Amino acid sequence: MQKTKRRTIAVLDLGTNTFRILLAQPHGKYLFKALHEEKVYVRLAKTGIDYIGEAAYRRALDAMERFEKIINKQNVSEVYAFATEGMRRASNSEQLIAEVKDRYGISIRRISGDMEATFIYHGVQQVFDLGTRPHLLMDIGGGSTEFIIANATQIFWKQSFAIGGTVLKQQFHQQEPLSPQDVTTLTNYLEQVLQPFWKAAKKYAPINTLVGTSGTFSSINKMAAAAASLTLSPEQHIYPIQLTTANALAEHLLHTTLEERLSVPGLEPERAELISVAFILVQLVLQRLHISHLFYSSYAIKEGILWYVFKHPKLMEDEGLSFHTD
View 1 (cartoon, rainbow, N blue to C red):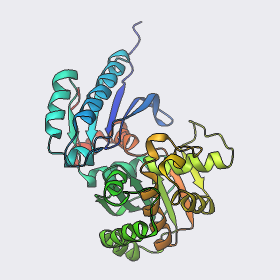
View 2 (view 1 turned 90 degrees about the horizontal axis):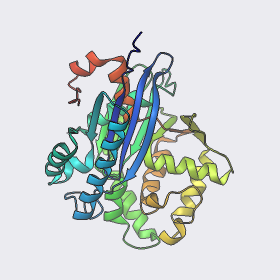
View 3 (view 1 turned 60 degrees about the vertical axis):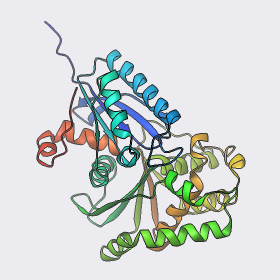
View 4 (view 1 turned 90 degrees about the vertical axis):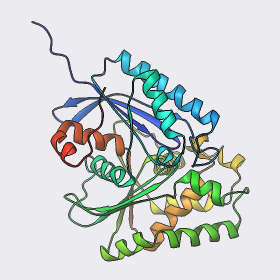
């Protein structure tokens, strides 16, 4: 009797700093089973968010070539490739998208920040019980930061702001270490830019819990684990982070040079440039909202896509979220 071929999906999250790939198959108990996952640092906005420089363009193509080989080797049946703020903003992103399609047969769709926030919600929802009270979900990328106020059954409010780590670094972190004036200038800027969020947070107050996803919060979680001599498990997708630990890390990092940050246990070298400005954003939100519980979720955009693909494909079509599949 011929064995039925399992449906294998590839999800590509093409961010401003990092390109990620996740291969998965449907799984009765847990929605999906991850077969392979990896990331490549491409730093699309290394020389500016509005144009992908020559070196970054080459890094992006190299990453896509690697992903194509993985896809072919694993006999993937469907590919969902989506790009975020870096390609939303760059004037030559359409050229890159066309070249990727021509070379590797992978169709990339640029998604809105609003759509990005929706995917993050459905990713986190799979591994964290959001209950009935409003929670804050926050994803700091390289080009943008998404804020979602939600509970287990609905999104109350969401918005994407063009204040990712790379953007903030280029605007406000010009010297090592950050000066007190740099911190004040950046904080004042964030206070103003985030006015819509402060208003929404007040409307849905009290919001006691923050669930952070992706690079910055992953770094905070790894540094916190290293400080406590803990080993992180790939099988665990939600981690509590002590606020006292997060505050101590922030206090330390804001007074360090890049060279010093490169030696901080748990901090990936690729994140060392951006972590200071990103931490200022995190600290501002923690303090303004009087957050009492902080968590890191390893599930975010990619897993949110899989929620649609495996569980609600019709809903994905109805909401206009359907992607070209190869």
